[in-house]
Image 1 (cartoon, rainbow, N blue to C red):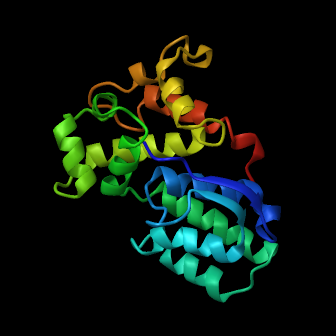
Image 2 (cartoon, rainbow, N blue to C red):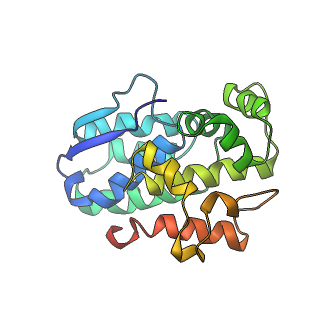
Image 3 (spheres, helix red, strand yellow):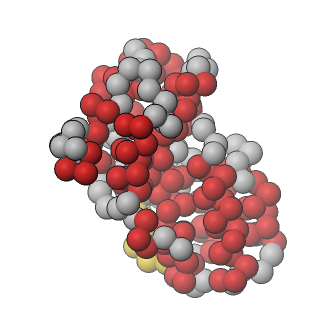
Length: 208
């Protein structure tokens, strides 16, 4: 299982936008959009290295115009803040099932992930290889799980993320998160929405 992306420190101007920058980096990692070959532990994330990090999304046509604006425009806090907010929102609305399946398979056991998504392990592996397109419903489940993992990564490593899905949560009525993601669920259903809200609450107080 691959090591989660870790950023030790942020250089200016990103240091003044730490919450938004961290949220985007975690989301990129959970969605499998960190460019191949990128180092998994970044000692100091500079503006230059951040632009390299978001290139994986832009290369898939996700937020490419926003990344271009970041590259060509003013790189100060006032200019970057709305662009980071826009990029985070675009990532939220941009499923990439092949990359997400591959990344999630590096975190979860194949049988567990297949159960969460509601498909066979063989289908899951085909999605990850890009050999087969999932249905829109399955693609949205994969994306939902990637978004939850991105939120959880603000507080847990991969081992902790797996454990989070398997333990009873008082705020879920003493239910287990993975038990609320069974069958042909949709992200907007009540139980999945509760899971997402609980995961997002781990980092929401620090959001900018």
